[in-house]
Amino acid sequence: MENILSSKLFTTRRGTIMLGIVAAVLAGIALLVYLNQYRSSVNGGGAPTSVLVAKSLIQKGTPGDVVGSTGLFEVATIPRGEVKNGAFVDPKTLTGKVATADVYPGQQLTSTDFTVATANSLTQRLARDQRAVVVPLDSPAAIGGQLSAGDHVDVWAAINAQGTSGLTRPVVRLVLQNMLIMTAPAGAGGNVTIRATPRQAGMLIFANTNARLWLVLRPSVGSAPTKPPVVSVNDLLGLPPLQIGGSR
Image 1 (tube, helix red, strand yellow):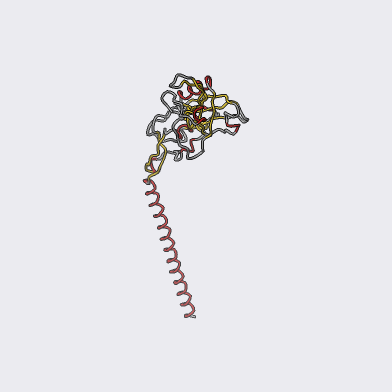
Image 2 (tube, one colour):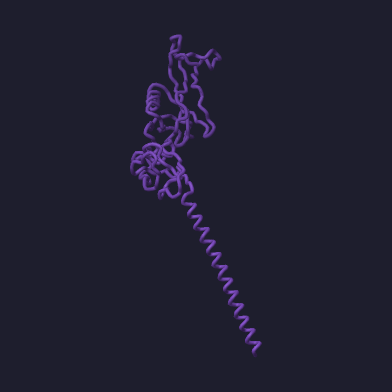
């Protein structure tokens, strides 16, 4: 009987010790996990983070599309602890939004500074130095109805020009390159809206009034500007190019 009691006592003590060891190990693991999480949180607070900040004054009402496409912002790297709530990190997130207040240079762009635009108007896609001009075109001049918003085109004008010899001859000249189409007719002709600078808008209006315009579709990628040529009957007949205003 004494041996049995001693054995039980030994077994109970060993079990108690084992439980204590297990508890100590678990406590140590929990402490290590806590310390690692604490260290990560401390280091994370100072880790650099890239956010969008205003490069120049962004006035109230400025479309987010314009901010994201015309260089009104820059990417700044700041400590994570200084990043404001709702700070933008990708310029694509500005699409479809509009500034609700003036944003000053160096200020972070946040969700509180922009709201969803109430209307999908052309003004939401124009910068301060850009204009939308409408040009009426027939089917061939508008690329046979294959023109879509977002395409880029070159603008050619067919006019009567005076050469260096004093004679007036019909010519075709490349007048504008890489112009953005904002809206295009669904059919094979109609009004085409082109984004332009004020001077380019004036050139389009003048050319549309005094000449015939043609749009030529550019490649979506890899296109490069070219020297504006002047094409006349001389080119078709293999004669020396007609000189207009000293240009060939």
